Length: 214
Image 1 (cartoon, rainbow, N blue to C red):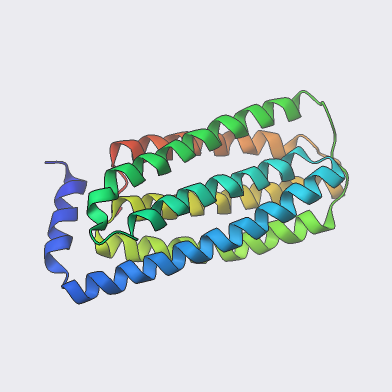
Image 2: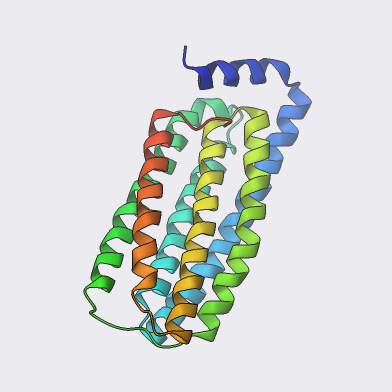
């Protein structure tokens, strides 16, 4: 038996039914908050990205929509009376959203490096990236803690997707600031390629179920 699966069984046995119910409700609330925030984030990023011709902002907005699909999968799982029965399917959806994110960011960064279009200065984009950099780690930490205690691989995987959004927020903020201050338009796509590699790795781990409770 895999070590992660063994830990999952031990933790499930140790939890009382009352505690499992509390953790399930907590995860549902955190997922709902993540979905709501990411919908707002996507709307602002896509609108502002189109206004200032920023591939980074548009990519960030699309990433937010991918995050919504991942969080929705976890919400669907924990809406069942027996969430464990939907664990594998939810985990697959989370993994596929990671892979989709990795592919999109790679293509978007490559096009940006080709110099197709240089973005204009965006104070709104900078503010959005800074807000996400502050909010997303808190949501990720809370969901990861609850998911780890419950022994839910899909909840832990989704928390790592939320944390990845934090990394993208940092990349976006650095790119927008460097473009505004120093004119280094290429800084964002270079860092985005690194994030794409991280997303691909996390997708692989989620697909295998290797990310539980670490």
